[in-house]
Length: 315
Image (cartoon, rainbow, N blue to C red; front, side):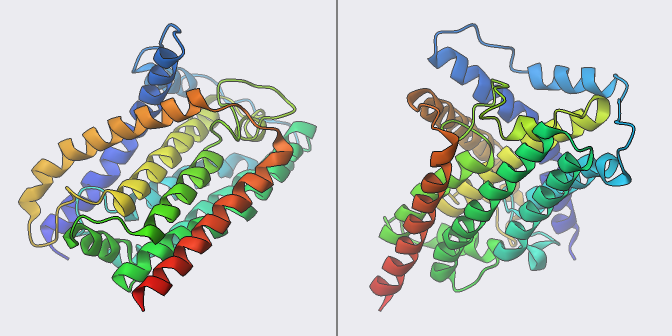
């Protein structure tokens, strides 16, 4: 374990924790601009977190330890997920654990805990949100796995660092299988992060909300951790997309000095990706909740077709 590896690992974790709310603020600002609305401040998510951390946490009388522990567990899972995704460098001490299946498992673990916590206090909205969250996860996780497997066929490895190193050194070309996987990944990302057209994070409509229904009973520092974890999840999915489809600019293990260039490149790519997400949300309409399974089934089908196309063309 080299000093530069430990440094790059700690730097990735620190950047993810610090920049995740900024990415959410940037997306909200771009979305407001595109809709000709008054845009909130770029630092508004930080102000909201500061306000929530300074408020008292009100907990239901019959809430168990699971309800109190779920925000910390979800926040920890999202931080670990961001830590194993190579965003600045491929020289990571956690690289042996940076497997595609382990990454999807972390998202699934966080989903299980927050869904159980939402049902713990026995409210109608919490139980409804938990059921919807598990439905989305049941359909989105296989699609995400197929997307990651499509990229792993190119590098012959499910290690994220190996995938990034292999794709970054290949000649610039359009892979039909990877292109289909990219479309599927965008659809999965929208569903997993409760964005339009699957959900609208700007409203609290009881009949359609997914993410908000899970956290209605939380307040204070618990709610702050959940909101921060949601920003980290969006940051993690953005970094997965950049690592799989735009891996250029990530420093390699034998070139630690390249991290000086990797950080501004990452910021530029996140800014472009945030604007693209806001544009996609502006051009889309919120779909009915009963159409979400069809939406995610289409994503899974596209990912499987991309996998099969790559296997056929590789022969």
